[in-house]
Length: 154
Image 1 (tube, rainbow, N blue to C red):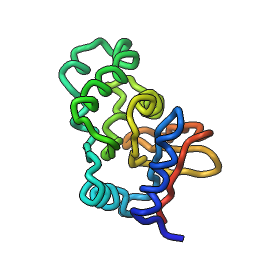
Image 2 (image 1 turned 135 degrees about the vertical axis):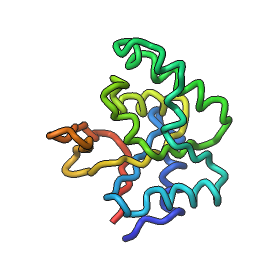
Image 3 (image 1 turned 180 degrees about the vertical axis):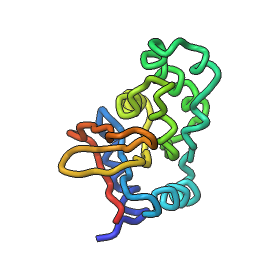
Image 4 (image 1 turned 90 degrees about the vertical axis):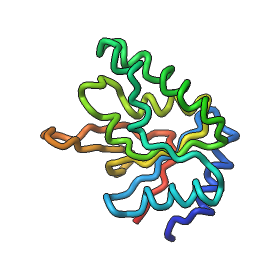
């Protein structure tokens, strides 16, 4: 059954009752992740944010070892200013850049403790694992998806 806006709205209502309020929309490039997120922003009034906007001077001025520890706090502060019921994060591939020295999934999980997050995962989901292949990197990064709400687009 194809994923639609109403299905995601229902998933988000379920998330709001949980401790970790994170859903990942996963699909190949061109599958419609960004399109459905923009539609949710328009129809539901949720806040659509390109992750590029999270890469602030405050984050970049930190030494790499400190970035991984401080990124969730900095990102949360930026998201808090939006005063949004639900945050839609797109363009996540920027968070995988080696210079940032952060674990994108860990950051999302931490953010989801204080914000309802629906994020477009820029990789694949297979057998309980999420993956992301960075351009110029020979091997994909793998992440355990245990306990995550995954919404797969065809």
